[in-house]
Length: 505
Image 1: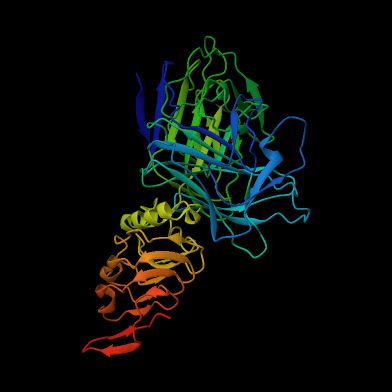
Image 2: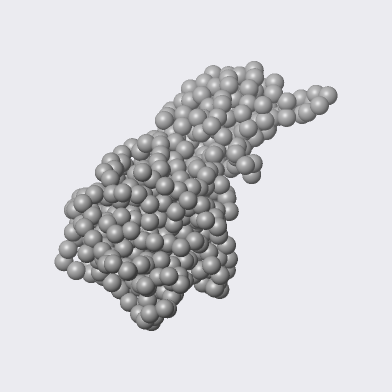
């Protein structure tokens, strides 16, 4: 049986070890800049990125060793407002997304760039890179649709975004569900104390990265002898591998000071604490302790269980900074020192997950992309996050933005215009200097907010629809379409608005 006990905003979860099924709906591993699949030392099958991205250039990085690695290649983006990876082969539910970056001085400039990272139209983080270090960023959240996009946006002149690897993993719906589904969780730290290596798949079926936990001079690592024949059934499914080791205090009656690595500025975090007894206790032995925050008791006594797991979860976001301290302090009745096996820290951002650009505009843009292959390399949310819209549109600043302009002058479009009448917030449509042909669609005259329509220098034929020729307040340009019936250039003044007509030439 699973038990939940609330203490000072905490939930304590402990249970017997029972069998749990794992979700494998999504397990995508993309080696960015590569076209060759390979399997790494962890048994993870990596794919090239050709099917997930349609822009950017592949670059090689000097290999660190003879084994194939995601550090050997990258994809760099030197054009466009933002460039995106996109996949439709996902199911709605909670996912973990990890983006990794290894500069490795691939361009010989010894100038690692900084740039922004987005997911599904949401701002993720500002990426900092290094010549020699491998950086990664993780976020977990609940998908709002059956697709996922990760985008990179240039923020400084001459500093081009790049990416080395991109991973998407399904998580159980029960995991990390103490946060409203409207918010993402940004992984600040995930550590396995006492381990001498990074733990991930296959030790963790969800492929979370459990880094080696740092600890102060007053603590020492300890190894356990507990055998976990099955995965502990606690809410966030820590793998047994992270529970087999721990850190504890060096000397009797002392506490364990935890090195949390919080920034100098204040952030809101959720903290998951994992405790498991490392040895079977003998008669008269007792291990119990409390969590202290800033030298004040923060929990009731915690008693780790042998061959089992106790998980502590903070029920609400906690404001912390580099001035915040956490420690494990033994109780008066404890004969053994405090210990901790693993820890997860998640930053809670201020903003909720976006609902995305208005669906009517997304539908209309999809019609344009279906008709014109040249536009299909733009993926992700068209308008968000602001100001990183697709290059050929403009958007309003509404919470659910509307597309207000299509700016496709000189894009090499060929064929007839599809129906995008659902885009009823359009004020400007400029398709000058393409190879568009056929009659001018009548629906353009029904767009209620359209003020500027530039159809010049194409191959339209027939006549201008009456819905356009009589539309008040419209600046219409159709010159350079020899197949259009010739009209006189004139201006008609009505009681309310002038209507401009421009002759074809």
